[in-house]
Image 1 (cartoon, rainbow, N blue to C red):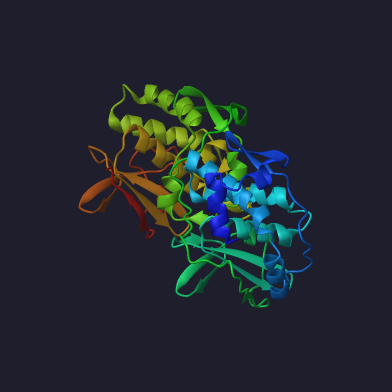
Image 2: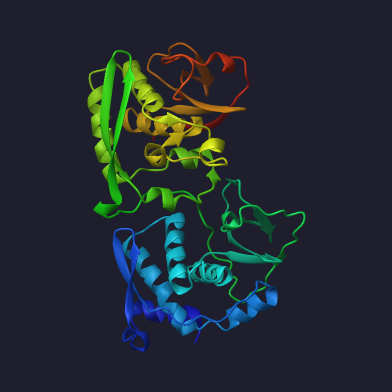
Length: 393
């Protein structure tokens, strides 16, 4: 039976009796649980050569695999989620079918098969002991390998598992497989976070001093965020800055900040958000905190023990957008990132862009306590580029 027809029948409930009587096991998916069949005994796979992979794929039991794809699709029908979060569920299913620690090659092939059968354009390459798994994406992605094939960009999904690969010493070959499809592209944009269980949240006490005042906030944060985005690549600023935060986190923070700025003039309110972003969290460069470049979303910045200038800029951008929804531009210097906001009345150092004047706002801690319109001295004569411009709709 054609695998796509089989999946459709499973989704419609046709032919379900062949596996509905088997022992079903729960698979935790964010705040929901789906039932999948008990894992079956996988075929052996001892190396990642093209012939071994092709033989393994040819022997995959389609009727036993189809219910897992169907379970993922049913979840996505009930809870529309973005591609990156869907891929995390694919990883869960692959781990259940064949634990990563038991056989990495088999685990990777299950991920590849499940994502391909979910409608994505996937590819596999190999070289010696390395088996790389790619998905077609039209977006600009940094710090992970990509390859061009048939005029399309394919981004590697499992490079992090190997730590580092010398591509000059290891020449990779594409593995020709019948399941290769020319389907939809994968997107790294996250427009909405799924709901999570209450048990996944914890309260973080945030305290800082600004001027002669002390401030305290209790922010409800999702402990699952670190794991969900641990392998998330470096993306463009427009993707990083516009990533949402979880509803409980939003409701624990934004109303409290709104109370603080409610009676302040616009410039004073922006200054309050500036000092919150600058002093409520510990600063550390990515190289020291994570070992490599990493751009945190606003919620990850709230959750993380350390964050750098790009992360502070993303959080400040989010806060200004939610509380004032003002036009903003991202200023990217050779070794620094900061923001400028279009205020009703420009103040101090300003940047002209698109016929408008934007006031510089520095959300990272500096040697001196800078206010709205003050740029650190070392950047006043450095060149920069407008890396992203936000205009409210």
